[in-house]
Amino acid sequence: MTIEATDPQPAAYPALSAYLAQQAQQAQQTHQAHPSGVPARGGFDEGDRVRPVGAVVGPPLRVRPRVMRRGVVAGAGAVGLLWGSQAEPSARLDALFASGAHLSGLLAGYGILVMLLLMARVPAVEHGVGADRLARWHALGGRYVLGLVGAHLVLAVCGYAAYNGGDLVRSAGQLLGYQGIVAAALGTVALGAAGVSSVRAARARLSQETWRALHFLTYLGAALAFAHQLVGPDVASGPLTVWAWAMVHATVAVLIVWYRGVVPVRQALRHGLRVVEVRDESPDVVSVVMRGTGLDALRAEPGQFMRWRFVQRRLWHTSLPFSLSAPVRDDTVRITVKALGVHSRRMRRLRPGTRVLASGPFGAMTAHRRTRRKVLLLAGGVGITPMRVLFETLPAAPGDLTLLYRAGNAAQLVLRDELEAIAAQRGAALHYLLGPSDASFDPLAPQALRNLVPELAEHDVYLCGPTPMADAAIASLIKAGVPQQRIHTERFSF
Image 1 (cartoon, rainbow, N blue to C red):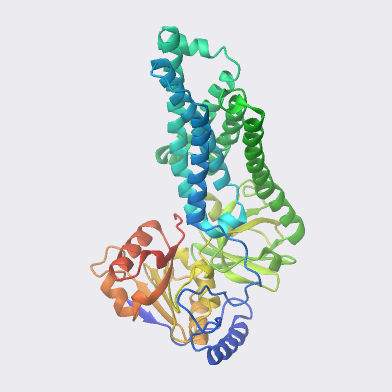
Image 2 (cartoon, rainbow, N blue to C red):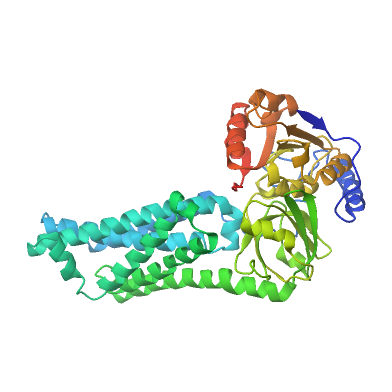
């Protein structure tokens, strides 16, 4: 079912209508000067990157995913060269086992550093790669690291047994008497516990707080592994190698302490965020409006999210990731939350005046990914929150911007009044795709999308919604002719 945006109701967000009128006037002036709807150097080029309305001058540094991948691979290659420069060719069985143990151990130590770096919340990495992709890489890297740690353990025991001519159990016990081996064993246990807690079946049975506490064992495992490597033959072979290995570890440690510890505290002291209003949007969705000082310094871009910690009983100990559901304006920021878990349900009981600790912004689903004049925004459920901000702020001439909003029924539509006001003011297309997901007619089918969005294959697509809906939408968009590199999405589970 499709509903066109007509007769918009008064905007629910304060002063939205007046603000949109001003933006519409600015957009019209821009359109007259640049018919493409986007100011460009010497005219719009399909490869140009565009800046959202109201964005700060001088966009933040971003590390592209391709650059990040190449850097990780290059680092692994450097570790391999370090191993190769010290390896002594030999056909003896014990030497072969030992050589494999050394290589797997070095790669495991390097892999731990990469995993920690991916989750260090470095802005250039977060804004360029994207939080969801970093999380997937982190999870995949964890499997490789645990595999390498296991290989290192088995190869080391087998090599020692082959050298002494003893059995594996006795050899393992004898190895524990060597300097640094106990640290390695404890580090392996810590990494194993963190890895087991992240298995889907185990994580489903753990609370968020318990999982995070177990996941902090990764830091302990990394520290113990570092202590083990400093006395090992590969790293301890020379002062230059020890210095280089220590500097790499120190750099990652400083980044973690700075961006996960110092920066959030500094932001909390600087901005003084407090809740000013909690507003019901639907029976299970609320908007939380917060006000602080100097919020422009956050440089939060439309489409990004932040991690929020509400200093109130039963919420203070949990950092919750939520997208901005309105642009930062007049030192006011807003999130819109659906009651899906214990913590999000408690948001409805937040009291005005509650102090808020916010870190970020995070995420890469922003205007910098745009490469085409025409843009389609596709949202499902409460995934409308980042799309609503992009719908208001993305530079676009009338007719170049379309929003498709998928929901089970009209009662599930969130921020509807605001969306219709934005559509009317900007001359943008707004369609509600309503109906159960198991209906015989699929509004996200390729032909249905082509009917709704003329020249669909020429659009950039921004997508946010539940995983099943997002997977189905991506498959349909690709079948409809949209190249996968022009489908920009960050996943989250409901």
